[in-house]
Image (cartoon, rainbow over all chains, first blue to last red; front, side, top):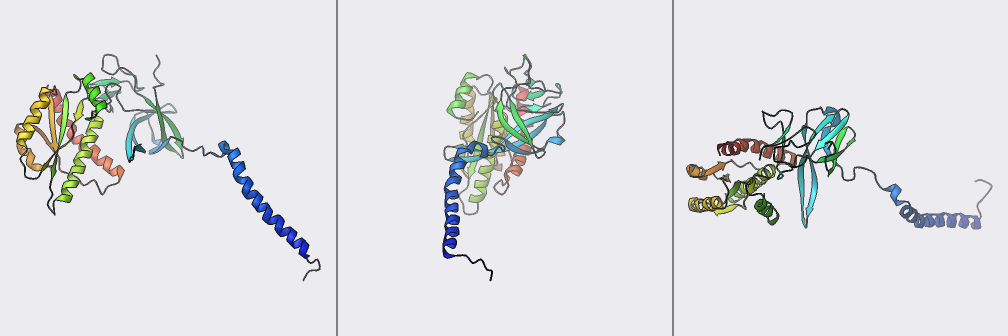
Length: 169
Length: 149
């Protein structure tokens, strides 16, 4: 046994401080968290949807990249599979929406033998340059939309759609 | 285009471009040993026609399916439907089905027959792959018809 024995008063002091400390911490923690909430928010993907496409494997030739996300229609939840045409322009990754600006068909890359290096819409022979710019004289009236892209762990993430930023007017 | 108010308004505004219609024909078999297979075939056909509609949204109108009981003759109904659709301005009418007996009507109608594939046991990626493959088989049929006119 050691010589400095703990008196009853000391013992109670220690215990009460300890318990009180925990209680105070328990009350303060949520308050502090509320106060600094924006800092704690996870910065992850946000609206970005992961795909199986490795960024390193992309080339200058557009490839199909499928991605799916959950869509809620009133009470009906479904997994929607969508597609993007993805290629590299220098070091920049470009993801174009395949939805034709004419009436909403899905366009294909080099879908027509007579027009290589172009996107082609089989419905009404609409054509687009590689950067999505519509070719005058074909039905589409605007350039293909573009997806925002991100990279995470070497894989491509596809984000919200926005108007084409590659076409210079 | 789907047969919904929004798409039909688009159709009315762009009538000359949307000249093709798909009518799925779904056979319903209620017998004890046929009902499961019948539901699987119907699921497959509706998935596939939706997929095709998605690809060719700007040229094809997908009609709600015609359902009929097994063994009931469809030739009269199909003839009338096709006639009315042509009167409404559609140039090409495709009937799609996974019921083999309807291939007998191929002389009077464009019947695209596709054997049904059970999709229920597949996960989304495989299912998508299968539908893409099936679509690739159907595209030549459509383009052949379209290039005729």
